[in-house]
Length: 350
Image (cartoon, rainbow, N blue to C red; front, side, top):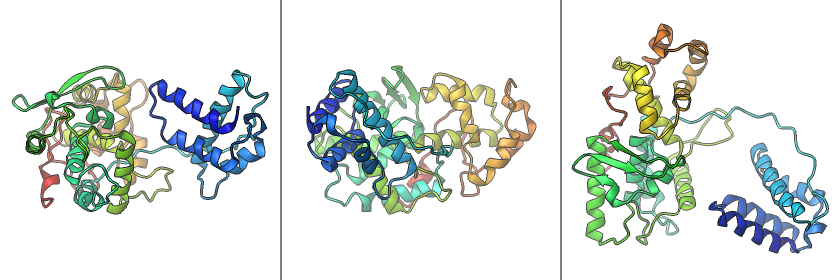
């Protein structure tokens, strides 16, 4: 079997398993293009190393590509298409801790304002208004992008002010209340869809009135982020992502609750359920996702393992009550619901 045919077969198998397999497939195709359509068994470790050491590749990218190729050749070794793995010696890379990004309100405003500019590109399949509405929905609910893409018109109950999110990654569905501000945004979005005569039942549609492709959405957001001038300056391996809007929602909610004296022992479980998380450990990590200048102090103040109540640590509670989203002021939000007000994001946005 030749390399190109092996790559095509492997990619098809992965996609048949339900994986999007977009970026991984692009790496494999690039490997085939660089080495050529040679017999699979003739690929050498030197050729693989040359591919891995491509100019400009970060250590993180090197490891991603290495694991991908290891899995690819393991697959064909198990099927006796090759006699040995043509993999070079694995690099020893010091792993930098992954730190999630929490957007400041000012950054979110810039993202929404820049949507019109970024979506002028003819290659974009998402119009600026839909993109803005989609991002507001993510920030105001903490939903996963995939959950939002799967939403149908019927999942939005304008009378009750609720949205039903179905089949998340744990195959659990949930119906969540949303703020009046967000409901107004969704009502306007749905009215616009009816005026356009859209037939597809998905809530968010591309320019061709079909569901939005997930990989295209990720590329669209990264272009928007670059145009907005939003980037990290802490030597992190990853620049801010669309997924970080979920973390931002959680951190901003917690900061708002603490400022208003809410009981975190009651609100954290509610927040976990609202976001579709399965246990408190998944939600407690957001207590450490604070602005960089606070992080060292917060680590010192974090409750010790085995301590039952977060509010038992008075120093921690005092510190968290002073947190802001980067603009110097805590969010103005009540303590009874996890939803985020969005009216402040829509001002001066047109």
